[in-house]
Length: 207
Image (tube, rainbow, N blue to C red; front, top):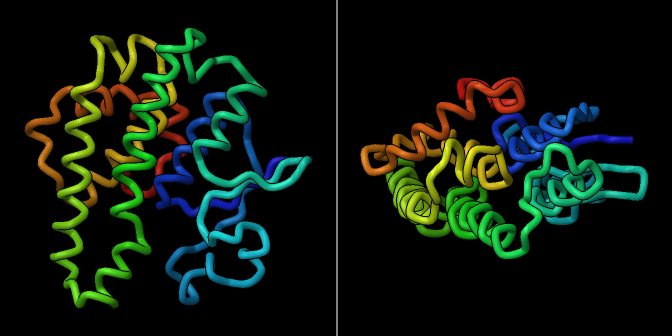
């Protein structure tokens, strides 16, 4: 069994779709619409799947996995080809740190529930929320770019976990009209990634 609780526009879910596609895996998909019905992620039925009320969640034979990084690393161990993390421990840690720069430091500040809280609790306008999002995306992507070694992709000449996290964040950067002028290297890498079937065929609408 491989059942992905998904939302097409979720960048965290997009990461998992990319990784599974790279591994040649095609899960059954159940859409959890984050806007309809007040947010289907808040329904009791989905909270029973993932108490955080977030997507993605992935049902496998042994139970439910949550958090995109944990899901991806699980399948990287289960299906090691192509590898998304280098074998050498120090380099592996560097690639994981790049992924976490996005997963831990950028994405949480610009996700849907943060924007909703800014509007509800602090009276922020849509323009102010968009400016908030741009601020943290641009800062995070600039740091990500500064940590990259030379190569075709984020780490050398093979797709890694860092690319799986970069591509969805670049979708968000385009959505919020971020300034790409200082991010030329990332724009080039992202263009290459968008040509790969695993990235293109799993992309959100209008990505």
